[in-house]
Length: 102
Image (cartoon, rainbow, N blue to C red):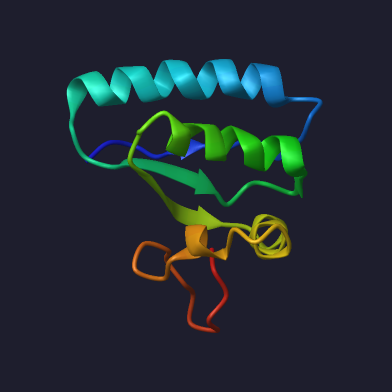
């Protein structure tokens, strides 16, 4: 199993270009090594906007299989607000004892 890609704390329009370049380079490398799902971690995300979420939607449009393994409260709320709650599938996310997604 590979190490998940850590999304940056600021997943916004201001960091979108740099994050996209880093994410695509990582995804290309991981896809060449394995045919499994790519794992992304959003546990450190404290700020997120539509541009940040659009980066992840672009992965889906590229036919790259991915899922989240961790999320922050800010990321979780943004996904639910934007109608992307299906990205928060409990089969893949880890939860602490209190039920919060980590």
